[in-house]
Image (cartoon, helix red, strand yellow):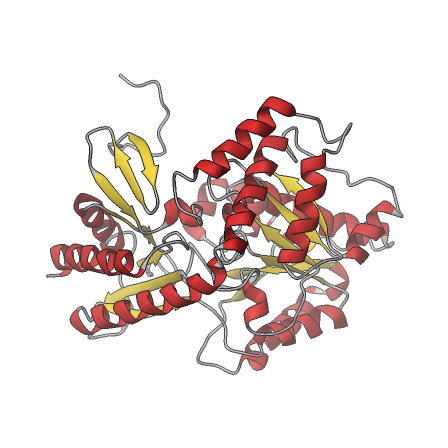
Length: 430
């Protein structure tokens, strides 16, 4: 008997080694990591230079508490990261995971308005569907019913107004106008922030709005003194072909950019946020402290992993490769769509790609959970890891698959991924 509390009752293979885009289990089976775990392993597995940097840091300075010290590695990383993101004047707040980073952004938005003398602002507008994390606050902000339902009694629904998903077929600026309408209905003086994933990840399989959407969002947020939070936990750090995905459509800057996953690319727990100068200064010139914190925030060994990963991302031009390999993978998905019309929609930005599964006769997505999970299991049996999802369309529908291999994947490995996926689709869809 294992003493591990697993995430579900299904059987789990035991992973023992990772190399590049591949994982190997205790029985010697090889798996192509077509989803980078949960779109985390951006630079691939087994990078010895990252492990070496972490070991060196652990030997020199393994831990300091953020209420007592900064560290040279954190000071270095914060500057490097802000410049990489194109936000050189922003301040980096480090934590250990994406949910912690989202929680930090929500609390920071609240404190920002309190420091400015507007304590009535507490609501955070998000979209349906969306996913911002598993902790209670980040889950309350999420528009993902299946993950929220059990914990709804612990939430305050009026604090989390929801917008419908953006429609890439509509005019982007007009689509974003729904934010203005919602603010007027809810009372803009009660709203602290609007938070959105520039390219949606787990909840709606790589959905992105039409051009003009975020420019209009920025204007509306400015008009009503609402902060714009870009949740780049999944879409950032080069995954979509740019340091921040929001920059792909415009030169819009968020007030807070939330980052995770690709920061340390799975080598260590690392996430955080970049805060605009006016947000940082309102807090530090007000009470003088952010009323929030975690024990392991800014952990030197994790930050050292982040520095080494950033070296690789920049040296190997991984955002550029994400665009190139992403185009190849999207073309392959479109070819599979011609063979399997149950792939109702395929889409992607860089190496964040997805497919919505449904009935081609009606154009409606399948009920969930169902087909996506079966395809995921079939892919696993063939040696391919994908990221099945459900519920994106609402009303119990919306099976989908998410793909996001390491940004370092080669062209031949993309071809292998597509071959394995085609086999899994054949197994399930016939």
